[in-house]
Length: 258
Image 1: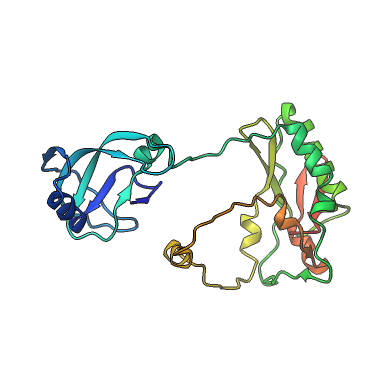
Image 2: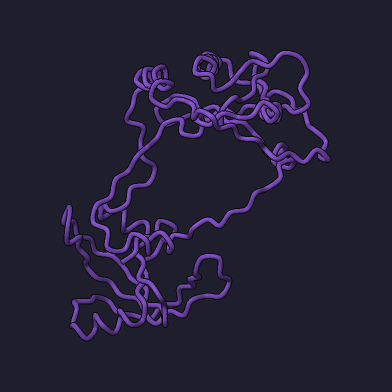
């Protein structure tokens, strides 16, 4: 079955339903259903043949079992294990906790410039539509209780050369939005929605999940790499830096890297 974190219900297609019946699987409480279900981005409801309860087990790994309900869809193309059941079986974890303390994050950040240096000889130039009138937005005031953390983040970015201080007027100014992480630390986010209206798009085809799964077919080993500050390794061209200007209670800054 495919794990679907966006689905609340467990779905079985018609061919799988016939297969498990022919194999005399132990099913409980097979019954008709009036439930209205629809596929992602589809308005028409799926045709539900019936619903049943069954015990399912993770064959490899933790070996957990759970009694759950399945909906049999007429036709269908994929068996889906919904979010609730997947979490109960321990095969889906949503919202990874921050296991690193703020002190460790600060230590990593102080040494990040040695671990992730700027890529030499490459500067990114943003295609800006000069017909769009620049917008200088007002500062969004940061709560007093969070100002020290915000100042620490700004000083860290300045030390790493990711941002630089802006002196004098700027045609583009965006406000800072503070997001509280689950470990109590703060993340600096810039509201670039007005800026985005002046950026000329470059279009590229993004692979779908099906494309990626096809490429992973036959693979046996998988690794996960979390690159910190990955977007800050490429230098931003001087002519494009002004559009990234943002305002805080300490004044205005702009990005050197993206």
